[in-house]
Structure formats: C-alpha cells, structure tokens
Image (cartoon, rainbow, N blue to C red; front, side, top):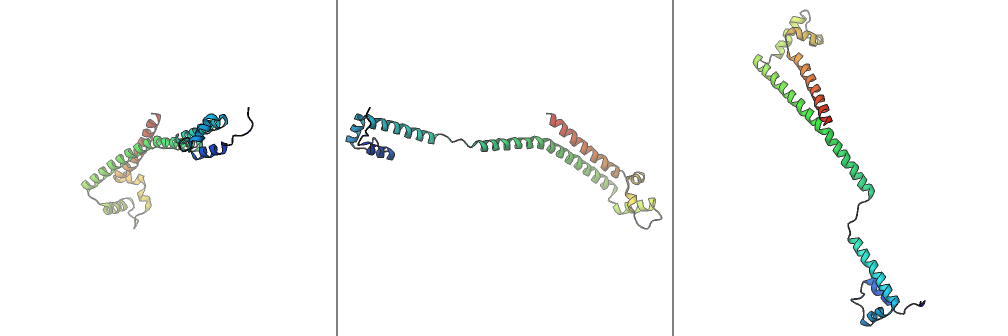
Amino acid sequence: MTLRPCPHEKEVVALLARGHYPQACPAELRTHVSACRSCADLALVTRAFQTARTESAAAAHLASPGLLWWRAQLRRRNAAVERIGKPILGAQIFALSVSLLFAAVFLATQATHGLRWLSWLQQLQKTQFPQASSLHLEALWPSTLIHSGWSPMVLIPILATLALLSGVVIYLASEKQ
C-alpha cells in the first residue's frame, strides 16, 4: 500500500474534469494511467460517476409529489362536476322542452282566441268588481280566475310543478346510475 500521491494525479484530474480523457490526452499520460494503479482507479471512478450523471440527466424527471397530488385532486373534482352536470343538463333540457311546449300551446290558444288582454282585464273588472273604478290586485288571485273561465292561469302552475318534479325525478334517476 502506497501512501504518497502520484505526481501526475493533478493532470489526470484536470483532464477528467474537462472531459478530455482519454481522447484529448497526450499519449505518455495515457500510458502512465494504464501503468499507475492510483491514476487508473481515479480515472475509472471519475468516468463511472460522469456516466451515471449523464444517464440520470437524460432520464425523465418526475414532477413533485405535491403537484401530482394537486392534479389528481383537480381531476377528481372535474369528474365530480361532470357527474353532477349531466343530470342537471338533462333536467334543464326537459324543463326547457316543457316550457317551450307550454309557450307553443299558449301562443296557439291566444292565436285562435285573439290577443285580447286589455278587454279581458276590463271584463274581469266588470264581472268581479262592478263597483270598483279600477282593477284591484285581489282580482288576480287564482280563485277568482278559475271562476272567470280563463284556464291558462291554472295551467301555468300545473305545468311549472310538472317541470320541476320531472327535473327532480330525472336527476334522482340518473344519480343512481
């Protein structure tokens, strides 16, 4: 076992640090490294570490665990929003179709009977409150409208309730799937 350092060790270290060993090194230094056990071990270990460093740098880097966890939580939330959004969208489409159907029926009814809103209000005032000089809000209560023969005011709450209940039923049915 030799305890004294090799006189060419500094040159070998400099060449290895710059990456010039063995291609850009003088021939006599190359023969010295092959003959000197200390320099050969130094070259072998340094080149092994350099190779390992370049391989690890070329390998794919993983993101931090916090970022991976955050992305997983974001995906989970987005999936939950999609699961919730599908039945709500179905209920909205159904409610819109019922509303459009009601609007079409209402417009067809008004087209056949004519749009006589003002004459209807005047008639309601004369039949329900002949002593009043102007229309009062009490005349708009559903109980007085049922007796007046005007059915769309009864039909509106019924269809609205139907749309609301059908939306809830669709939501609950698609929730179980």
